Every structure is written in C-alpha cells, then in structure tokens.
Amino acid sequence: MEEVGDLTRFETLRAILARLRAPDGCPWDREQTHQSLRRALLEECYETLEALDRGDTQRLVEELGDLLIHIGFHCQIGEEEGAFRWEDVFRQVNTKLIRRHPHVFGDAKVETARQVEQQWERIKKAEKPHASLLDGLPKDLPALAAAQAISQRVARVGFDWPDLPGVLHKVQEELAEVQNAQTPQEREREVGDLLFTIVNLARWLGVDAESALRTANARFARRWQVIEEMCRERGQDFASLPLEEKEALWQEAKGRVG
Image 1: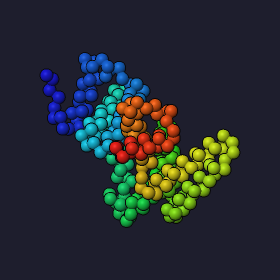
Image 2 (image 1 turned 135 degrees about the horizontal axis):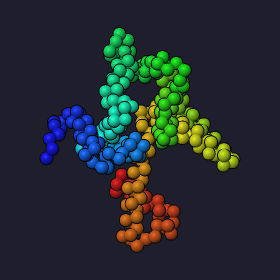
Image 3 (image 1 turned 90 degrees about the horizontal axis):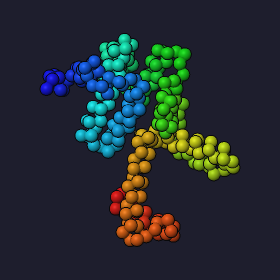
Image 4 (image 1 turned 180 degrees about the horizontal axis):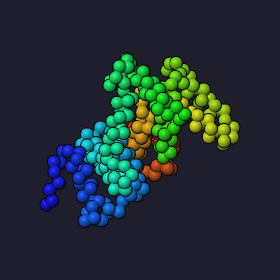
C-alpha cells in the first residue's frame, strides 16, 4: 500500500488530492473541473447543515471532511491550471480575518457582538467603497436564506426596528395586507412581504430561519408518515375521512413523535 503520511494533518489531504489528480492517479478524479464539482459542493453544504440540525457529532465530523475534500479539489484544480495556488487561498482568508478583527489583532475597541458586526460592515465598505451592501449574495442561495442574509446586512448599518414589539406589529400589518389583497399579483407580493418580515422576526428572536423551516419540514414529514402508518393499520383511507377525524389523527401523530 502506498504511503500517504500522517492522516491527522491537512497537508496529507493536499498530497492525496494531488496524487488522485496525477497522470497515473484516479481517472474519475482527473476528469473533474470546477464546474463538474459545483452541484456536489452544494450538496455537501446541505448535508453538513443537516448534520448540524440533527446534533449528530459523528456525522458532522464526516460531512465537514467531505466539505474539505471539495474545497481541496478546487484548490488543487486552480493550482494545476495556474490560476491560483493553495497558499493564495490561505493568504486571502487569513489576511481578511486579521483585517476585519482590529479589536483582536489591533487597537480597536468594541464591547458587543452587534458592534463587531457594524465594524465588519464599515471595514467591508472601506475595502470596496463603491460596492453595494448587498453585493456578493450567491444567486443560488435559497430564497429564505437570502432574505435572512439581506436582513442581517441592512440591520448592521442601522436599518432595523428599534425593538421586538415593532417587528411583531409589522408582522400583523403584513398579515392584514395579505388578507386584503384582491388580485393574484397582489397576493403574491403581500405573501412575499409577510415571509420577509417573518424572517426578520426570526432574526430578532435569534432563530436561523432556514434551519427552523428545514426542521419544521422534517417534523411535519415524520408526523405525516405516522398518520399514513396508522391509517394502514386501521384500514382507513385518509383522503375520505371527515376533517375532524383527520385532525384527530394529526394530534395523535404529534403525541407519538412530537
């Protein structure tokens, strides 16, 4: 078996990826490009998030490793193409972290996490004075996650409600506008505004909206599967049951799986 080095070191991963991409390496790995790996990178990000949501430490270790493989692949391909080197990636991120934390690596003074966020935005603005605050949001970011990112960015520069009751009042206001909408276009616009405001409410409550909805989806699916199993056991056709019995089954399912 070929010697690969200390398996606990990042340099070993770098060496393995270079070996896989070598002329006498793995045919599949040699065929990969930045674009061919794009979808898999996104999937690995979601699998890492799922491990976080489940609180599964062992799976998180595995998924972080898979994510590192993809980051390493892109670094290796960039180096082979002469576009950039691994060291360029490390230099870029390390320099950015030091530059944007002057309260740790310099003489700046901050006392709260909110002040750190505001300082971060000021430094970003100084780095790119003509850039929009909303530049850099990935186009493929899910709509809910994008709304959360937008609301976080504008809040950092002071465009926010003064307190939680203000956010709750806005939710009620947007809900009323949904109820009063007359046309399909109005309903779509007002529902969008309501969803965006709900995302802001989640931010105020310290809740990650994307994770909360993903967890709610999984919780609903578990309950629904219990309902389906109960109906099979009892010889019932769920679709033909009266609404009251459907609700009773739902409550029973909630009692079983939470």
